[in-house]
Image 1 (spheres, one colour):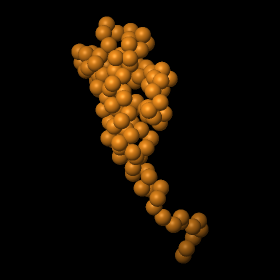
Image 2: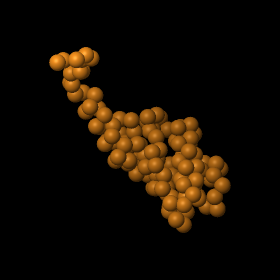
Image 3: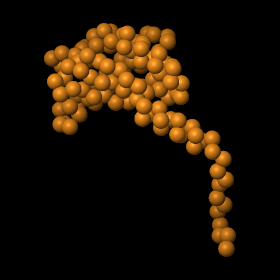
Image 4: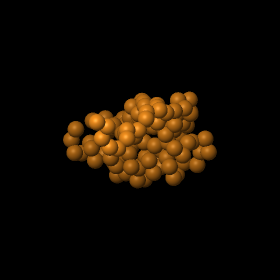
Length: 123
């Protein structure tokens, strides 16, 4: 990936995070929601936005994705004010499955009862 795309993805991710966390006034939107990855197309017309939630509730995440998709017009207007681009790409919000799996694995590991090793020599 070229430096141009990396910079565009990074800037869009930063701006989308700001818009979702501070500018959207939807009480149904989870405060634990975050943008995990952004991938803009080569022609800058489409942008996949991967969303993750610090929770295992898949239904809550799907509801939040639907809220974001319904607010795409507002988000694009705000993004146009923050990012200097010839045109703002169409946003496609997706669930970040990798982050959800990581959270689930961490929860399983926390719940394992593994006895701690004792310090010292057991010869």
